[in-house]
Image (cartoon, rainbow, N blue to C red; front, top):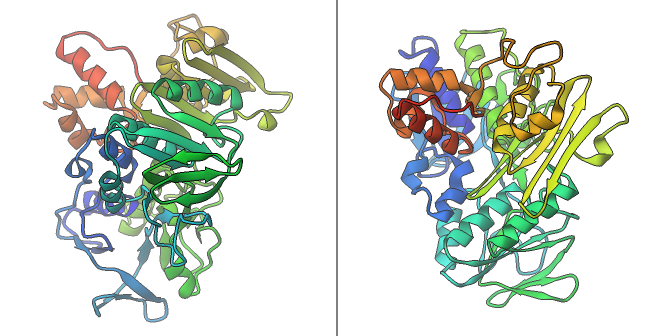
Length: 470
């Protein structure tokens, strides 16, 4: 995804290929596609063709699929390919991403890392095809990993009619993004869908045709096992070439590696400010590097990520960002919490020095839009915190309600598309979500803004003014 965005940005900045020529090399035979939406393919919400990303059709960009890079020669500045050919380079961009990590559990994977019988990851289209071949309506499926991807996969499998169990080794699901109280409510949301959630449980072995045995001796029935227990950055090419790497390929604010002619972006890159595993920082890195290498903005820098997580599960609205774990909250941090387990809603707002520093919002879509904007802009938080969580009109300190200029509300955070951008695209003739996506890129990131874009289009189409979204 990030390599495709880099090529697209280069084509936009240098449409005639007068300054830069980019050759994209990809192992998969498919054109570039949005991996974030793979759980939607599992659910049947998208076809594989519908998640394809734009292919630049300009003189300065050429794309080669079904070809793998096998070695880098940083002295000769050359990339060796598995078809026996070689590509010279002036500047090299590594956007090799990451692959699924299979835990060392008997039956889960073979010694060569190949998934065991009935086991699949969910990292690429081949995984989707494998998983869908293993699942049939009414069949039991076990998802190993209760993070965002695991929960999205579980929701997608329920949509296919499967009976799903989720196993998470941490004390609660989405341990990195939400607090334990929110996780309890979220687990109830999944139980309502028919998904059985098993937190604080470790898998002992996978028994093909039977199921997953847990550390307490129970066996969860399963015809298929979906592994979403983390990823490993694809750093082998860089390491073999002598380029410094740890969990990922080490880069600085210019996105250069220890070799100044080699750059890394996306999930394979390790920047001090983070960003791996998230689409928005990856695309920001692609934009920064494209501006630098085309000469459009040689001074451009990537300063790090401000992660925001949206769970893309039909019927569940969850947004989380910043500091929310109790262990991370110091005495100077103010916390406001609304818990409604019966209504399957939960909200937690953390404020420090009159600025939003974190939030968990389950079932509070309007508050999520407002709070994420405050988090992004660093604007002062309104005095009435409770009204803010309820989505009621509020005012920043020293202002009257309804007064004060606000930054444009972002509809699509992944691509920094505001409500005003959507409205302008509509005025310019984009009347469908696909048309909006083509003009603005909204909905082409994590997919979390699809509902909001559809709501805006519905409001504009009926002549009404839609409510602000985010």
